[in-house]
Image (cartoon, rainbow, N blue to C red; front, side, top):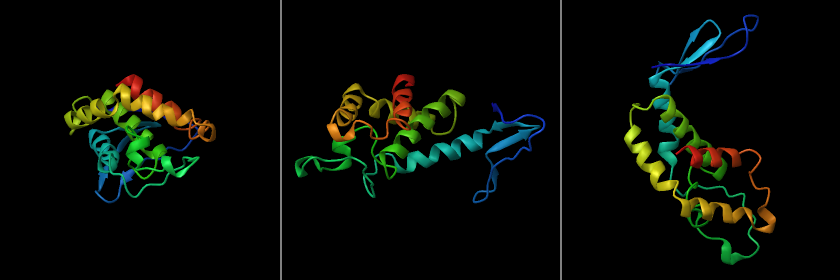
Length: 156
């Protein structure tokens, strides 16, 4: 099963991506339509799977009002830590949800579902939202990654 995505119109040049490292195509091009392949979906899924729940290295963007709150990333981001920073982690999780919708029988689908079920629990999402209620963090990453966080949890 290939998913088609329209890019541009007939007057615009079309480009496609191949994975140089593996030599496999992530997409097929049909005119100006891109079709994500199963191989491409598996490759994209592997990216967040390699760093989910790996705490370090980690770049935080959180403002801590005192040292008592400066703890390990998984203590203040129980769902979306790993992948170097919170923003990347949210987008990686959202991508996994999207890829499962497009390719429900893709390689590692069972592993992905299991991880998402464990990660996207209400208690974890409530803890994630707590950080945004702190005075110095009310706008932390919400314009760009906040919708991904909501989509990830609402769709899984």
